[in-house]
Length: 126
Image (tube, rainbow, N blue to C red; front, top):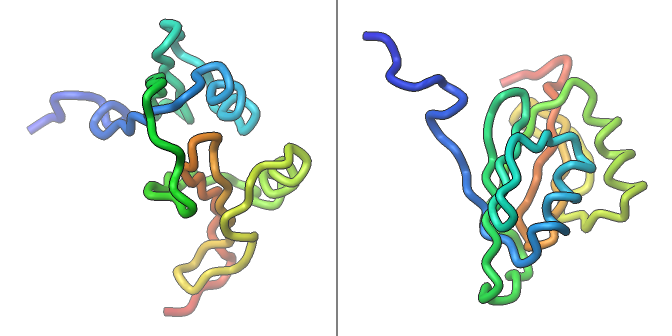
């Protein structure tokens, strides 16, 4: 049976944010493309996969650790680590080789959502 929607639309994360302009700028800085901007609702994309930002002014302060983590696979994680360092992004987990076969790091968006940029390790043993 053929899929009833494109795979890039099957599962979409919607992130509630306090300041849509600040969040949009943050995500754009790290390579997300703006597909649609409705003022308080922005549709972002990463290689065709969507991420929604929805402005909500009544959100509580972000927790000290992220409640959500979004993994983004990139061809060169070192490039994104340099970008994170240059931007002054809040680092939750520094770059490193992980036992699950990825080299990655996690930064926090303005509302405390974790963005984990990852690249596969060349050699990974189970």
